[in-house]
Length: 267
Image 1 (cartoon, rainbow, N blue to C red):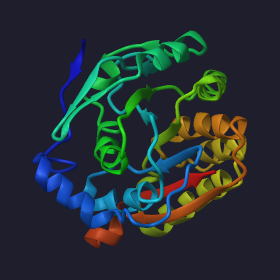
Image 2: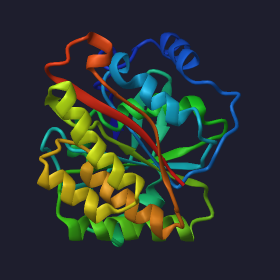
Image 3: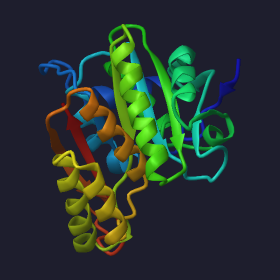
Image 4: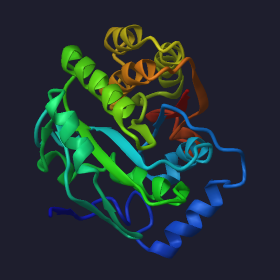
């Protein structure tokens, strides 16, 4: 069994298990009523920048049996759509993959079983402490790293995701790991982010992708979001709600070059 070692621990989030748990207790309120959305979109920067925004969405969800985590490929390694099979080693323990579900997605889409895209990719890893903290029962993950903007392949992935969730007896949540616009000033980033967010709120994946391309919105998880919206609608989603929208400038005071962060619930 392939074991993936953490690459973001100590940089993006605490490497010490107790410190990590303390952080989660600070940012996630476990007593609020929980919901079972079809999908969520959450940021993946260092926790000091985007952790609280991600926590706002994670704090709203109930426990699931399986979390299909879709993240962008920042490294360029591996296949275009890479499904990992094995174990993610984390400071709090290990997280196993649901290989049966992963192989079903590979059979029904353009995805491949691939390890290389996951080795140095942080976008999925940084979501796992949140998932582990809010899960009150045993769970598995299906980690998928996406490195293509080919709409046909992404549409097929979205359809395969919906079919797999529909036909499973397990309770499954789709988690999209994505930051918003990158390294432009605060005003530009807010405007670009709002264009993308509005299309997502309308559950209009084509208009969303059109805007990303037309306005050069450097949202790293745009492809994952596109596939997730398709899947969520096929699963009966009727609305998407913005929970919080922030930027790195809100934390460090540098508004000249910011990264946008949004948490969105799709129900």
